[in-house]
Length: 230
Image 1: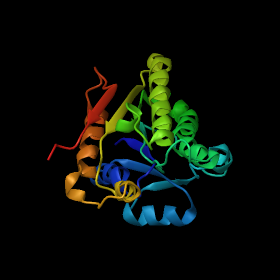
Image 2 (image 1 turned 120 degrees about the vertical axis):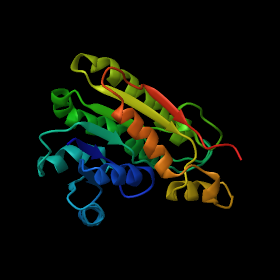
Image 3 (image 1 turned 180 degrees about the horizontal axis):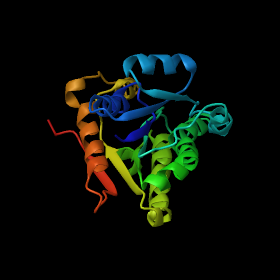
């Protein structure tokens, strides 16, 4: 039975991945931003363990984890949480830039640093759920795209560094997915939200699990998945 550390399990793609792994009996260690959120996750995924740490403040993750018990064994670390706030470069404030970079890039790097010792023992896997914006930046998406381009660089560097330990590193680049985040994006773009136009989080979860469950004689480095054109 494998053990997975997952961020973003409260909604969207992260919730779908956690639900699928929970249903097949794997052990879950779910990161929550606070104790209240941790209780909600345990209620949703009975038997799961939680760690409390705010991705928006990665400088304090070390301190937070020093007061908690980290799992002894980890087979995968899945970075799925993320934030987005659209806006042109001429209007985005340093606070907006820092928030994107902290949650979408610095926190995943810091979490990876903490869990690498366990992952090296198991020759585990790190999965970064990135975004199509990690491959191409568009107007009004600069801060989000920059954080996701950085996440791609983090994954590529980590893959080369950890080959000697047998750690597989995968970046998944989903297109628009029906989720609360997508509803927010549509609102910011001044459009009506229609979930039927986008991929289901379960579809992206299937992509993530394909990379996770691939036989150990191969690895998927980069995988893009897009909604079927209507």
